[in-house]
Length: 153
Image (tube, rainbow, N blue to C red; front, side, top):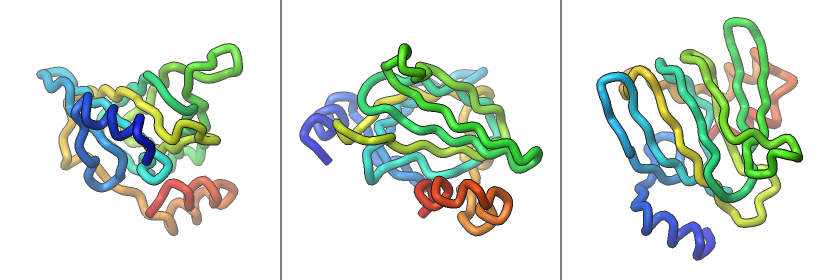
């Protein structure tokens, strides 16, 4: 991890994210929702997971991200580039409906990190978190094998 990422982790202050990797800090917990900051690195991607809340991702800084959504109910695959270069097609925000498997990683890293914010409603509850399994996802989405392998441990 480079010096700039380490400075951001210290300045924000972020901690290792359990189950997935990367670094995070909860910034809000309310009756209707909650939010975190999440610093992704080459090693610390957002592993494929499903949560029981609707989620909004906001890109803040760093390298462009590839965000993958797999809808196991319909077989739909959605790949979104998140980043600062809107003219090149990057999106600054995306929505992940509850129950959709999702994961993200740096796309062609130059800086070696990306900072995003994630807000969920209703508020975060660990009981609604599932870390998805590589083999089951690959059986359901064989054309996405390379992305699934890159986003699972």
